[in-house]
Length: 138
Image (cartoon, rainbow, N blue to C red; front, side, top):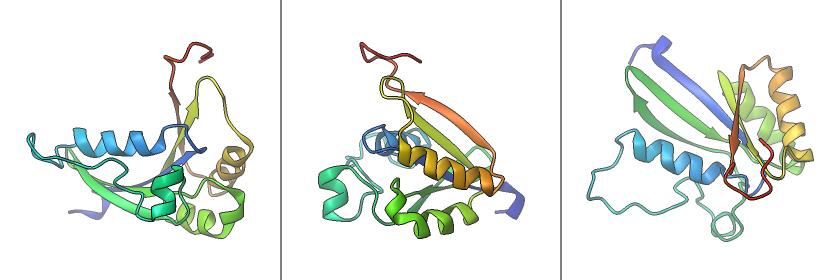
């Protein structure tokens, strides 16, 4: 794979705003799995506590091919307490997806990680999630 065809994408999101679901669906629709293959949820959550609470504690990555591109998804810890890991992840990224819950809006930890991404001059794409919630205000 040619270097210019590789993209490292960080995903910035608060707890329960849908990052795990988004990543699972990106992997699914990339053709990574056979149609009849049973795939567990929360593919990027490797620690028991991460699976149980739906949080990202340690940064990790997963990759898939999309058309002629190789996409490396970098899962960022979403809390300021993990600032060192967040900064390391963002230094590796070419860009970021900012995932925001349409009902709750961006949260303080999300602002913290977004600020770090912008300081690193990363292009950011805003993704509004959960627009089907009754109180959503996209």
